Length: 616
Image (cartoon, rainbow, N blue to C red; front, side):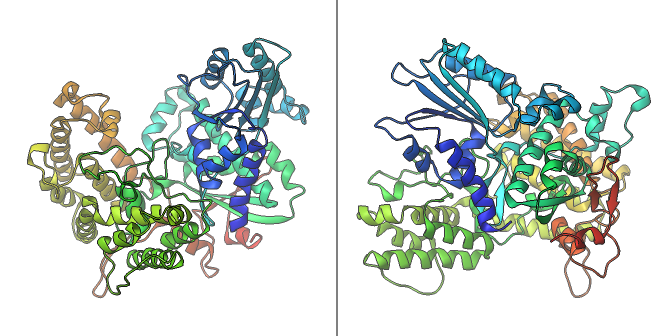
């Protein structure tokens, strides 16, 4: 993905939306807000709305409606216009005084036909028509109370949140996760005995729940729009069972087939199941400042990929450590600030030490341009030194406004370096390295027994000990990097000890975090008995074993673990790196784990390096 491709795709989509919002009350759902946040910035939306009053509201059932002086509303939604979404639309409109409603959906009309069970043959005959959108337009007028009022429903592909020129995220699909072996049992419960699935490898689109299939089709719709923007005819490849389903759906998606007939460019799209390698997601091996910033600073509410930066250092307010609430937090996304964007992109791709020096360099240059009294100091960069540079901007409003984006990234760096969690990072790294050595030399039971002394209930923990969430991270790391293992008596005993200790840790928490509430099914620690906790932990370990066996179906990519020898320590080799090396190594035989999905009627599976040679 080239820089203009990802960014221009998102910005073009938002320009279509912004053309509709003048003097309107705008309702956004969380995923669309995140796309706007990274792609254009909320100020761009405020400018487009204009007028003395501007109201942006979260799209939710309890959202405040429009008053008598607010006749126009624009709803920007990332999801299908169906079910609860339509009910929420109705409720907001019925308690408002709107005369003009625009509803923008990120999901195209073809997917709405699928969601309404329109057969493919009938859908093909409706080309150019949009009956689902037209019916909703009538409903909107009905809810506004006058059929002569104006209603519009349109599709704009607001799929991506472009974090960097070569990195875009899909916030609407943050919860889409590959299936695990235990999910096969759930799928089988809805199937007759004769058509039971034996393993994940047998799961196809027809076996999925309707909800999951529609979620995948919504993703495919957005990806097809992206390929259309690039002007490419894509070849779809997959590594893993859910990726195979998504790649096949994109390959055989009817609007995509029509689009490919006129596309001039070519591209490969490779889908990879995240469950095949959770080591990278949970490990602390990355020597990267951004990884640490996102890990330790509090999440920006409603966002999946940005954090809150405390800006109190640039105000006259008292900075009291006990006060956790931030009135106006800063963030990492700075789409309107060229200097801050350049720094952000540098932080993403450099090592920790160089990244901190880059932050200092940008602050020094900005202070120099504003003629602020900066005192240069060389050598090691400290949080105090960076903070002293940031404080120079505090009483100079012009300089503060000019470099606000840069100062937010500077404060994010300072707060991360000073954060107690950052000091624990080295503890994680040391233990993970120890685990890598142990996995090569010992059985899984020995590895789990090494973790046991670290599982301490709240009243025995210090700041250096692991919290319940951190213990879960370590367990996922152990099972993912270890991969397939032999189940024996020793392992059974070791797992039972760890389960019992973990269940006890959960029970003795004074407050349950949102994650622990979800895992245990209890909204308060008072309700969590040891019995309930043990049941939850047993289910957790079923998932952990599934994660360990996620690569069982692979032939080449069976391991992310590289054993040590006399000259090198044992190490972790990311699956994505292995996939890319496999694709670009012409000397190796055909990659059997990278499956090519044909767009032919028979949906034949093909593999082979030769398939990649045909595309750029």
